[in-house]
Image 1 (cartoon, helix red, strand yellow):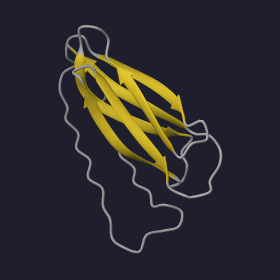
Image 2 (cartoon, rainbow, N blue to C red):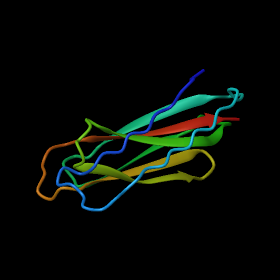
Image 3 (cartoon, one colour):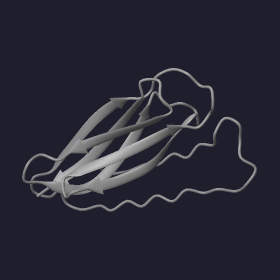
Length: 115
């Protein structure tokens, strides 16, 4: 069982003149029946916008959603959408922030499932 959590906020490479903050909430509990974590990666294929979805195993539903950009792009790409769709699927979206950037990055959707 995990005993901690972390969240990281980072400014875009061009900077930001205003103030900003980040709030993270963590809820701890005993592991529920049917617990599973499912990850699915989707390539950006060189596009500025990408979506990835992960689906819970049959008989389980979404209990949590997460996402990750691989490799970390130092502020050039940001996660902007997390949503549970249906009772057993999650979708994560990310967008390249810096115009003119090339190259492919990977978006990982993660869903935590249980009965």
